[in-house]
Image (cartoon, rainbow, N blue to C red; front, side, top):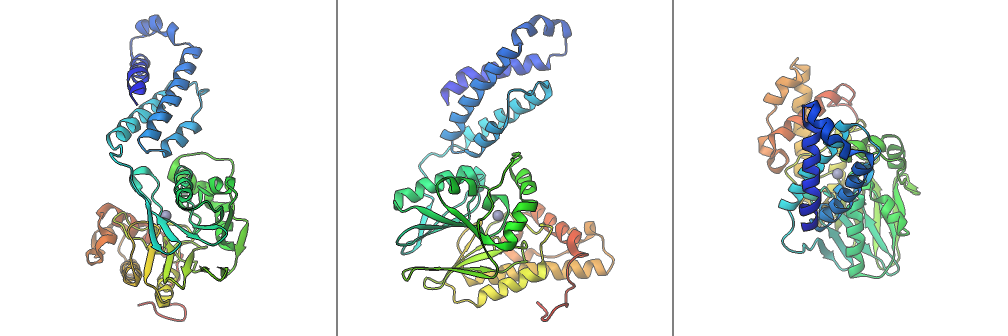
Length: 385
Ligand SMILES: [Zn+2]
């Protein structure tokens, strides 16, 4: 950190000033120092010191963005943008550096744990793991920079190999870490629909969530249609498909003996909203999925984002989505515009799900955009009201 501050920052600042000087004469006088070799050297030194700084402050996600940047970009604008962006992130990460080692592993039952996600570190997904007699079974892969931490944390608890990683749905914060787990010998497991979605929409979601451009995504190699069970007599994990709901291929991991269910994004328990905008979202399917999961004998619900809950969390999540869907659908039928509905749809009674008014407006907007292509409110075999 100190090396970064004392060496690279002044160089970057100096270069930035030079790059932005408007006077051509002065720029020409100084420019000879800034030939390609100098720039490349600065870039490499910057990359290494910034990597160390980000690692020491726990902001590992920035390392991936840095690794994706290359020094052959000749455009001054590109370099300036990269430097300014990195500088800001560095200052942010320095200011938010952890003051103590955070324990992110929480035990739920014998041999059953979850690793808590953290949005401030861009690793927001809660990741479950079950220690079978011969291997470790992981639920959701998080991002690659988090996957490395998760693997290290699992190794502090058990020397058993991580053999399987289940993805609850295809979004990047649940699947991008697949490549790290498979490099450690794990096979990726999912519903058939998830594998199809990851293959077709996965890259776009990676770009949206991380700005990283990738050539390759690690697709699940073990795929099931409705249900797949891991049971060795000591532990039982049932993987059950509930999509189309939040996405087409949603699945949950249910542990009947412990009464624990890992629900992915079918239910969240934080104030940053739900992602209601997947192109294959099915609101009615989502409401029914939550109704059906709530029928299982459950003590603990582990949402992919936010704190633990119980069956009440599933019911509140269901009521929130059902209420919004009803108001949006009725509002659109009455001729209201999405802009009007953002102001008139009344959801304040839904507590944590609507803590952030801007997120709530975004959710209403997503619903309005998708309303035309969704099954009507009272279609199908049961009215979810
Ligand atoms: Zn998510």
